[in-house]
Length: 137
Image: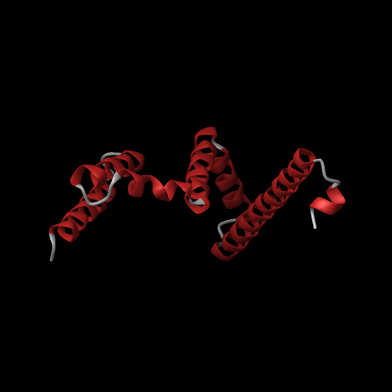
C-alpha cells in the first residue's frame, strides 16, 4: 500500500473513533478532516473544497442546520410526545403515524422546492426582459 492510502485509512479510522465516542462533536470532526486532507498532502486545497460546490452537499448541510434548529426549539420533542400520546402505546399505530408525518413533511418540502424553482425562473425572465410564458417553457 502506498502512503496516501495508509494516511486516508488512518484518517477514516480516526473519524470512526471520534464518532463512536462522540468526542469531539461531529461538526468539529468534519472540519478536522477538512483541514487534515490538505495538510497531509493527500489532496490539495482545491480538491478538498471542490465537493462544496455540489448541490447535494449543500442540501445535506442545510438539513443538518434545519434539524438542529427543530431540536433546539423543541418542535421535535413536542411532535414526538404528541405521536406517542395519539398512538396510545401501540407500536403499529405509532409507526403509521410516524410514516404519515414524514410524508407530510416531505410534501411540504417538495412544494417549497417547486415554489422556489418557480420564483427563480420568474426572476430570470425579468432579468432577461422576456415574457414569463416564453421563458418558462
